[in-house]
Image 1 (cartoon, each protein chain N blue to C red):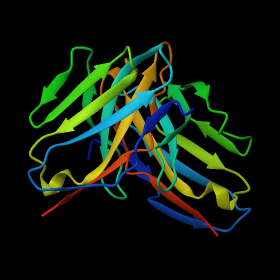
Image 2 (spheres, chains in turn yellow, purple):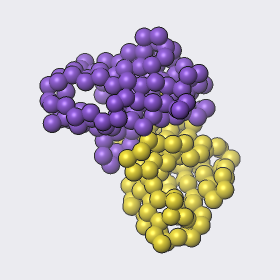
Image 3 (cartoon, chains in turn brown, yellow):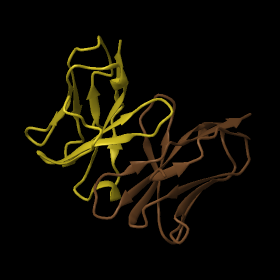
Image 4 (cartoon, each protein chain N blue to C red):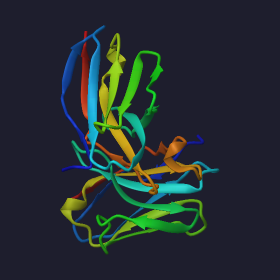
Length: 110
Length: 115
């Protein structure tokens, strides 16, 4: 089983739609969680950290379920500019490296 | 530009040649990470430094790979006797001492093609 698993997609959604991605992680000692965004042939950039209580940043909502070992990202009112690959990122306690998922590709269609 | 910079951006080399990449982190960042990304995959951890000390290396980092950060500032990643399987994007990231729990920033990467 991979340490961090994501559905690679692609998710093709119309503008204005709501879309959700899930990510599961295998190590229960995981301590920190993030969503990164990566545009085609560009470097990954931090979208948001994921906190235990859940957190929201504009149209983006991230949630963590430690019992089931998954995190989610919800994007409301999708924009064309949201088209990208969304990488789930996990840091295990006591380690300074992070582990990336394969990424979920989102294509927002006019 | 005060972000993470990597050089070169692209490198094409023949199999068996040696290549070296450079990463200049954000100046106040004392942690520096190297990752490798192949098409359709997420970045895979290679190694990281705190200041000049290399604190962790992945099993992916075979003996053909070596990384240095001699003065705790820029870092180099060298691949000796390149193989076609080394073709990938090599990403460098840097962060403050608190690591990924503060924001880590990536450079634009060096895309290596081994022919």
